[in-house]
Length: 424
Image (cartoon, rainbow, N blue to C red; front, side, top):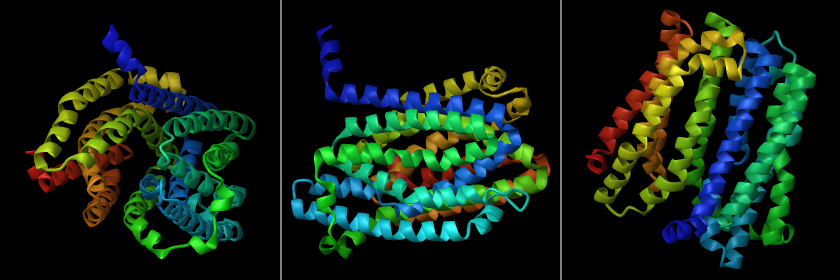
């Protein structure tokens, strides 16, 4: 009992428990939002939501220049060096602010162009892109401030910001979706994340006087150079990925219709919820161990610890999800979404391969293998696009989830070969 009490009282246990609560709340928020979308928007509206979500993900990554992980690293390293800390914070902030303002102007004055590109000529949602232009700077700043807080080692504050942000986002989504249907759903995607600014600004000013730190005289191109590797990896993953998925969804809409594309977006949302547990445990536990591993033998232990302890449990959980697929659809959505049950097998099958590949892929970040990561990521996206374009013609909407499963399998094989010395 004394041992258990000691474990419970450790900071690591408290932070991990708080983070688990944050993940569960995020999943709960997502499930409630999904039910609202099903009732008020329907499968066709779900496809439009998916299109905008992919576009906004890419836009948000560009606006922050993919600096987030790099900012955490260099703020953590330089927090005891006042001058270096000012250089890192000032340089990153000024850079992303300039880029974000340019992006906002392009979005606002060419709203009609983006509407046609993302939604097509049959929909008039120009206001969504104008709203995005107005809130984008606030989102970029809040993301930047969150990275600084994380770099300062204030893990509890980061988790609480995410918890409060999810709660505010849920309330905003409930109001906008219930009152404005599809338009409300689209606006909630772009507005909710920007509301984090007020909390991040409050917390950052408890740690340091942010407004006094930002000075043009501290702008340093060496900081940009240091952040560039992290920026490249983040932008390739966060920008190209959503853009490829956007292209695939537009192709699906053209081949099998908007409703079928909505079914694919639905199974994708369900997948996102349960995959949060894998991404969290990889980020919190396995990534630091990979980064600390000094040789192939130590890396091998980390890889196989995941395969022996986490992957079997995850696989059993997915089998249970498959058996309960009809109950899940009825609980989270409406009878209109029952055709989604036919997509579960290939989605879940592919996600097992994805989880198995992800732990290997984290080695790219742990060892800062920028070139290898970019090549593998682009190759995977190209294969996915080709396979999905071909298989959707043969199998309809099921061809998309089959393409994803096959792409994940190929990616796992390629990474297994590439990291064979660390794996076997």
